[in-house]
Image (tube, rainbow, N blue to C red; front, side, top):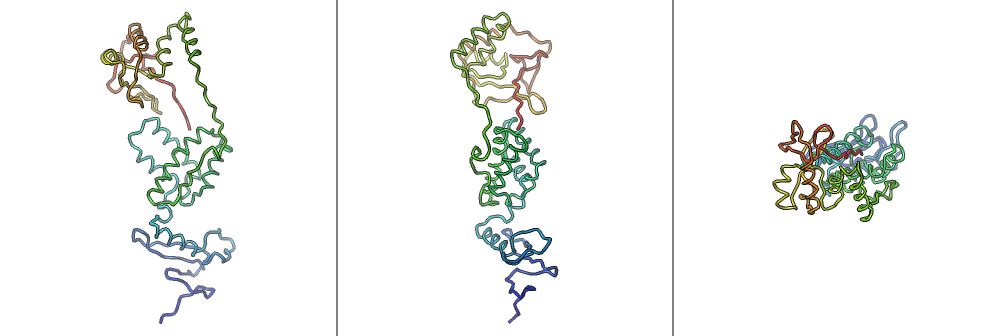
Length: 318
């Protein structure tokens, strides 16, 4: 019968356990992919003292217990060695077909994580308290607002949920109510009443200076006539026949380039009053020397002072 292996304190070592000459312990195991892996610790048991000058960490047998549980539950050990940044990058790479504003938001979060030590943490090391502490730090130390942090958490939470679904983690550390962790300092916008809207439109219509903007403001102010920009030729050819037509809009990318984007609703219902406004705008608009074209669309209904498609100023940072 072969002699049992022991450590320098005469304790029997289990299968896979080994003590190196420098006193550090090693556990060798086979992972879920059949590959040989090793974990190390300066302590064999949780009650062992930590050698002087060494950073405290779980004992070897505590690590063994976690590995065995992960293998039994088919959880990838060490979170697949993904860092928070790498996990978010993988999540974003799978989000195809999203609007360009959403893509810009993803990039902003990624660039922020590149500068944060939190982004370098291995995902299995991020606990619920760590996630909360980081968001608190963003608000109290970095000075970010509630809506900004809400957007950041809106990327990290589904990214970590993807890790849970892929068996890289057991729990999602970002699965908590945000308002219970940080102060909601966002300001609620109050919509004007119907009467206030009518009074404002009447003032604009009767004012010598602002009356020139009446048709555009009237159209924009009616919920069932939402638009950002409309193409004159498309309006004449299609809207006139049916006032409930899908429209395109011009958007600015982060690089200030124009692009065409369909409305989220898929169509823009218009009342007869709005159609009349558009007809007057078409009749009174100046024809530019060179009609701007964006992705095959020309004759934009609303042009800015440089005869370029007019777009909303929706710059928003997180």
